[in-house]
Amino acid sequence: MRRHRNVKIVATLGPASSSKEMIRALFDAGADVFRLNMSHGSHDDHRARHDTIREIEAETGRPIAILADLQGPKLRVGPFAAGPHELAVGDHFRFDLSPDLGDATRVSLPHPEIFAALIEGSELLVNDGKIRLTVQKCGPDFADCVVTVAGAISDRKGVNVPDVVLPLAALSDKDRADLEFACELGVDWLALSFVQRAEDVEEAKTLAKGRAAILSKIEKPAAVRAFDEILQASDGIMVARGDLGVELPVHSVPPIQKRLVRLCRSAAKPVIVATQMLESMIDSPMPTRAEVSDVANAIYEGSDAVMLSAESAAGSFPVEAVRTMDNVARSVEADPNYRSIIEAARKASLSSVPDAIVTAAREIAETTDVAAICAFSQSGKTISLIARERPRVPILALSPILTVTRRMVLTWGTHCVTTPRMSRFKEAVIIGTRAAREYGFADETRQVVVMAGVPFNVPGTTNILRIAPCDDRLIFATDPE
Image (cartoon, rainbow, N blue to C red; front, side):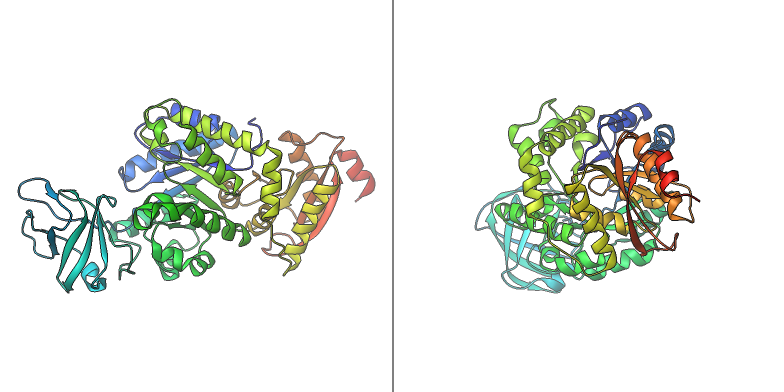
């Protein structure tokens, strides 16, 4: 059994990590969640990886979460007649809807939604911000711009429009097809790209129909501005720093990351920090010191998960990348300063009975010698509330619903276990203590906190807390039939 670690690791699968042997090696190295990137590969590719993950799940007896990441609309210029063209600072350049091949003075931008939103002074970024242009004049089918940052423009390069909200849905036709495919496949989480407003999230939730939880990617300035509403509508958040660093000044991303992580924790919703975390490990078996510090900082901030992208999907050292991330996480979590930092960020929230129960459980864990918190949940909400407290002991997330235990894998501090259905609290106590012993969190000499709700099998009823011995004989002696 793997040693317990609080922060979770998300590993993206791809050409370098498609075989069962490699996916199992990534799991054994520490991956908790596997990401299927719908921007690349066919449905058959993703189905094969999904099925392999479920085979490994059955073999290991451990729930594994699967995250399908939707591509989102891709805004790109059209092709050029004579290859790349160098744009110099001060050059005038036009984008328009004409299908004609581009040249040194203009190119097609087949997205009327962009022209509808542009105003004089808007900025257009091309090729991940390597080229920047400012709009001087625009209409419903053109934008005349002046180049402010020089570079070579060429076929199909991506375009970003950072300072306007585009009248575009977050879901393209491809995304809708991918969403339905992923839900039918049985993935646990859907990552939604190009989120600009809460309505984008609501649309995805309507289409998912509860078959998968929705995780909103924060990658646009509009999403940062509307974050409170987006967070409320979402089941989780991904801080997608790559596009954020293109559309916003790069120095503004770290404080935004810190703020979003804290807001997610306060809302008891999981948050992933993503993009370029160990980028150099695509080609190197060792990360840079700066990358290690970046991963560590995300963990010190209290993130639920940290993510590998190309490092595990297409890199030469996918297992080493996961193992590095695992080692960094364990090193941070062993640091006494880690505890003081994440506990200092805790905010009291006692607006309901479940809030009070989970706060009591955390306080008991801090002041007595309990080995774990065993929490039963029908929806996963109670587990999220406990994780918000960042307790000093492991959280055994127990549910009779497999989809719930899989989704909760993404949540900080959880060891997820699928249990039989039960009808009495005494059954919950016995199942919880036996799980604590079976998974190595306690022996018969220890005690655990058991939390559940009566009546059973009803979401939102958490109302009982008990400190229980892990010795079955003591349970039966003190709580006879």
